[in-house]
Image 1: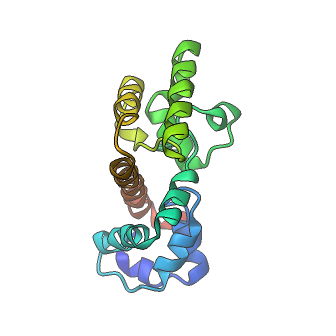
Image 2: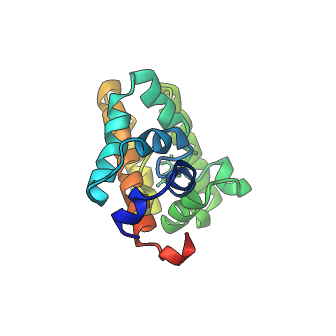
Image 3: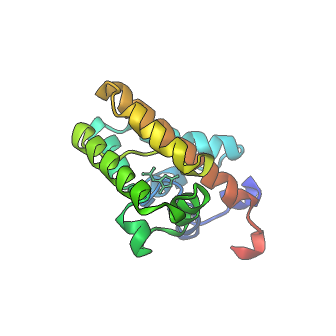
Length: 173
Ligand SMILES: NC(=O)NC1=NC(=O)NC1=O
């Protein structure tokens, strides 16, 4: 899909296609739509990132809280969004042992208790061992630094999702 096609989308089509670029935050796509026309894919990606950066901390934490845990209840129950399901499966989180799942659940709970939002990582780029080691490492970050790191992962997930969508077969839309 080329950027001309994106620029020609009405509001409904744009949000239908890009509404989950940032997990469960269709408001961001709704806001970005009004900034068209976009010069290219990078410009579109930059608009999503700029919206997140411009949010007050409460809004940024809200974006993080919209993310399901890695290898959490939603993965077990099959209630993840299609994108999240693909990403978590790609990271091998679908086939963890009971001990590995328990360990991640314990670390996720410790992380959430310390920072007040869930641990967010661009899972598609990692394997289960890397997820656990990143979680253990970041668990000790200073809160202000961890907020920035977590938002960086949200942006990476968004950039990868945008790339998927723009590579998508136009006939699919
Ligand atoms: N808490 C998370 O990091 N969730 C996720 N990371 C991904 O790459 N997809 C998710 O759903």
